[in-house]
Image 1 (spheres, rainbow, N blue to C red):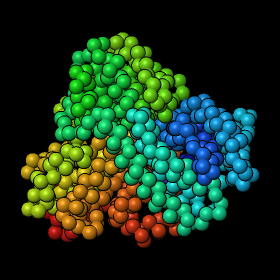
Image 2 (cartoon, rainbow, N blue to C red):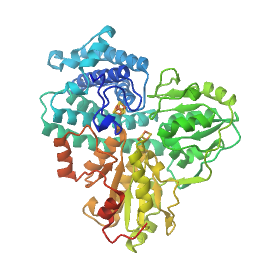
Image 3 (cartoon, protein in one colour):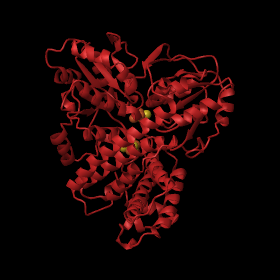
Image 4 (cartoon, helix red, strand yellow):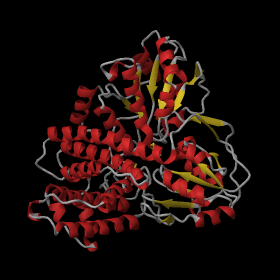
Length: 550
Ligand code: SF4
Ligand code: SF3
């Protein structure tokens, strides 16, 4: 069949090769095309800003923010709204034209930087600039690997920017690297080096976000989060944007409307600044892909602050609101830029006219083991490792998804030896965070550091343990990595770990389709990256044949 689109940026890509007729995620070919064009014009704008910096000019924060928001908009499951994406293409071209006029020798920039097509040409241009426009499969693979890492980095930057934190070096790198994906002179070796540099700036971007989050909301601490429901009508908040949640919590005080978190918003409960709100009652449901059932039974309005949106059922479509980078055609979008107060009164009015949520679970989840909390428990943890009570930590961070093969992670968690502790972050945790895995000398066997955005905590914890145990090499720690990925934020986390020198990371449930055989080989040879096998085989690999039963 003639391909109508080509996208292979996420783990669920069709046939583990590429979505060519429609996205498994629900993305339609016309939206995919407009996303391709948005990435293209963003690469072009980045080529212009990178040249201007080289000429000694400053780039405004507004332009930096436009670029990060553009990339964030194209992350899997963030935005399905063709009109909104087209508007961003228009705005980007307008700003590029303004900046291009300031470049000393524009003719030496790549063709993309000089393209100034009108809206009538958008569709035909989009058809020429997608992933497959790079013919060499290894160059294409590396360009996309870098681009997906930069999409993840953009998400982290955008969240930090929302809390008025900036790192202009991260922005300059992001734009330089994005511009480099247009440069036909770069060899595969150049692009491998740029991939690793992307990981370096991934660490900086994650550190910036950590500073922004903890500076604004305090350090997460051990928290028990209820998963049942109350009697008031509620608003369910999903995605990753803590600033949006803060505004909503403030605006709902005294209204009789309760706030619940869904999926990746769960870790908001771990922050002291949010715990003071009496109507911030708990977490409802599970990971993003369960939306269809859980949004239906929630009964009230739902606010998607970022990815991951599942195309909604008619039963709750009118209750689904988006904001920030998120968008869905026909769903109401709450506007508001960085530093602006968003107006959530429409959701609050809507909630008051709805029934309270229907109970789907009871009990609680324990989390809040971000770096400060874990470091506060360092003596206890070091003692448990030294005495042999904890044999190994298993990093099982990352994403959840709908593929049945992900049941591997539940089975793996259940079968782990009882002296193993899971370190996690991201929505991958929903595969095992409601199992009763117990504790080791009071240390829970699942230590949840937070959102995928908080994966930085896992790196800080590993580096601290390396220091405490006086080790030369981070790979000598009793930590193994069995990471689940789905979308592009997991790509920047992976690149950040590689930059920190972590070897032998297992990535599943399948390896990325965008890695060509040669690029995979580089990752295998240099970093020992591997996929997953059966639970039994992998446990033997990580713990040896003598492992005790879980
Ligand atoms: Fe397919 Fe994933 Fe791209 Fe959606 S984001 S079109 S599922 S590869
Ligand atoms: Fe999850 Fe989308 Fe990646 Fe934030 S919500 S980890 S998949």
